[in-house]
Image 1 (cartoon, rainbow, N blue to C red):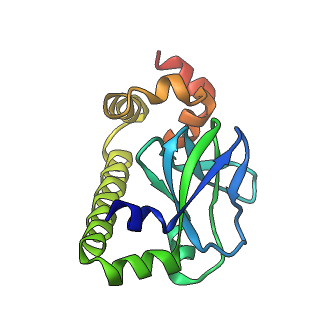
Image 2: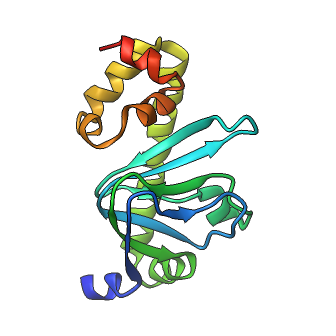
Image 3: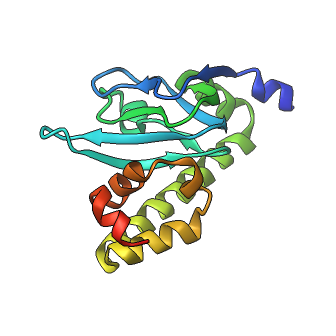
Length: 168
């Protein structure tokens, strides 16, 4: 069964800084990270970057509003490090879900897990100061500190690099 499942994925390699999704483009696939680290981010009119997600090995990333809604991408996805990913197109995901009911269950479970993680992040922003958000992030994902540049961690936390430096 594994060979049937993986036959629907396309292995791809990207270099540090390379873009997978650019705001405004059509999105027809999602990415499963095998190795490396990606970031999903939004840049506003003042060119301030807001990071929505870091995606490390075994994590998924895409612009899900664009992928599921058929809209143009509103966020960007690029590589913080060199990365190896598996690309799964919308058509192949739907085909897998129809053929293997356990896959449909997996994608539903994964979506629910992602929703819970986003809800926790939002609640952290509402309830914690910068130091509390930083400590929570490092407690949950200590490996980020060695992989992700500090200015990107600051953008994820919604603070300046200088503010982040004062927390150490």
